[in-house]
Length: 241
Image 1 (cartoon, rainbow, N blue to C red):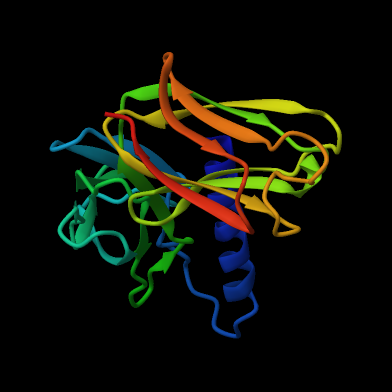
Image 2 (tube, rainbow, N blue to C red):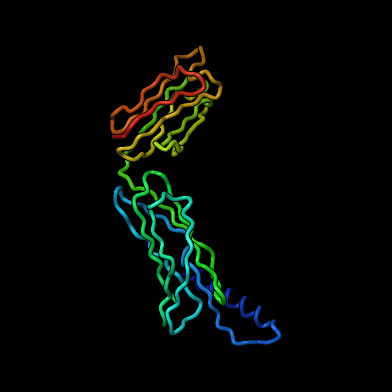
C-alpha cells in the first residue's frame, strides 16, 4: 500500500513539474489511476467458478463517479473461462474502486490475463496487471526411485501432463551413486507421462554392472515400473486415479 501511495505521489510530482515548465501555467488537477497490484494468482475448483477483486487507485478525489475503460488480453487463457468488465468505477468522494473479474474452471493448463486501464484525454494510467489461474486439485504424494548403472550422470527425466506440457523434471545425478529417490506431488485423477532419458543413448546399461531400473509409486501403489534397458529415452503413460 505504501508503494502505491508513493508511486502516485511521484506521478503527481512529475506531472506538476512538466506543466510548470509551460509558458501558460494553469491549475493542475491530476487525473491518474493505477492498479493496486501488478499481478494476482488464484485456483479454480473443477467445474466451479471464482472471482478476483482488483483494486484501482486514483491520485485525487472528486465529487462525481469516474468510469475508466478497461482492456483485456485473453490470448493466454482458455476461451469462455473469464469475464472482465469493460469499465471500472471510482466512486465520488473516494479514490478507490474495485474491478471484479470472474473466472471459471480453465482445465489443467495455466491461464493468464493481462488487464489494462485505458488512457483518455486528461487521464493518465499506470501499468497493466495480470491474473494467473489454473484448476485446483487434490494432491497425491509420489516417489520416483532409480537404481542406476555406473553412469547415473547420463540419466534425466520429465513428467508431462495430458496437454503434453512438462510440469516436473530432474537429473542428471552423480556417477557411481547407485540409487536416488525423488519425492513430489501430482494431482489426483489425472493422466501423466513419465519420460526417462539417457544422454549417451544406451539406457541405464553400462555393460558391466546390472541393468538399472526405476519405479514410480503413490501411497504404496506402483504406477510405473520399468527396466533401464532402453536407448536414448523411454516413455510410460500413467494415471493417478
